[in-house]
Length: 328
Image 1: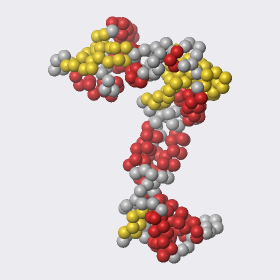
Image 2: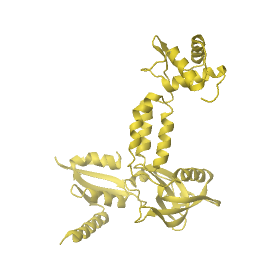
Image 3: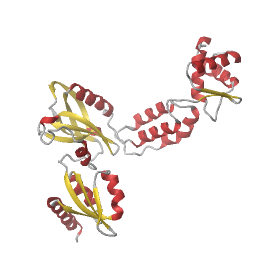
Image 4: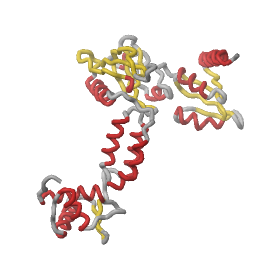
């Protein structure tokens, strides 16, 4: 270590040592603390001074437990189980780049001790999570937050993946931002397309070159057709699971009774259900028609949409087109 730190920093360094090297299963003796002070910081003090500093830390409100086997820091910002949950969330988040994930995990590990870091080091080898490669995502979040707060419109490029598996510009948008939505491990921007005057949901990891339009205020959501009463979050949830922007409406369908678990998983608890017989249930819910079509097609062997008629007809048409492709 380059140089030596003054002994007056011993109090701070002892606290840091307790954070880094101690927990319930790994208490530190005064000899242990003295060794870490010397090795890590070049501070050499007597055992009595270590004991006095620990007492001062306790008086200052730090929850340090002392017993025969040594002392350890009991209270931390996060429990190890909470940190692990946060790390798992970072790993599973498709909207965070692999590099940013690694940086965040390192910082989260820094909130615990070396024993926690050794327990989670194996997760660094797991990198095939279909993560975005858009480095601008967190910058975009900041811009959107600022735009919503200051009631400014935004301009951005929307991109789609090409044959080279890279994002390419599809269109430029001039929009009024209203809400950021986290769904299925991805961020979506709910915004009014000022050219087409319709509400859309834009994948945030597909957006680049975002900037504020300083001289244009956002269009009041209450002036948008269908949103005269503002954003109805039940209707917003009804656009799930596929984030379509068409207006939600009541849909009825019949399904196998074992499907109830999947219905809750996809649509939440806001639906009515009744038993038709020992094997079938009848369900009614408010949902995006486009989302319902996609969902019903996914479970076509177990679900039959009964109303409204136009959704049922579109599903029939899709099935007929699909059969033609597979018939020899």
